[in-house]
Image (cartoon, rainbow, N blue to C red):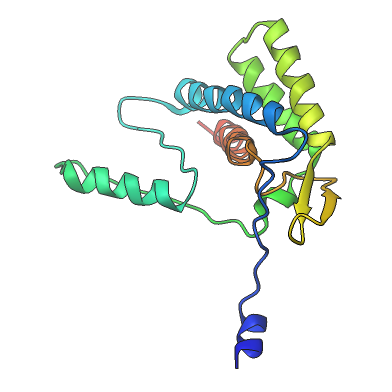
Length: 173
């Protein structure tokens, strides 16, 4: 029975990359991307009627709902979420780099800061090592982001935000 159940529930284990060689860079770049994410969302999508909330994981969804439940409002509240299967490994490295650069350009970040973030992000993505099999095997993820990477959530959210903004801007006015 248990063997049969394993085949019915396909899953890809999340393998933490917290001991990878690029972890310190990943943490630093992740913080920069988080800042970039919120500033870009605010500049491109923010208005008086909209509050942009970036969901990082299932726990943050629960916290958001809890906040809304504790602060009732007469205004209607809509929470829209999407779940994309195999999101992190689906992205191509150039796609991640291009969308990050686009967001920095929208905000007119200083050239030195743009260059620094891009160099460090490229270093993390090009050396995206992760451990598996009780830390016995080391793999290099060639495309996408290792799911357990410290910057995976921020980078995926930023990439999807850039696509969303481009899509909204392409709509007829």
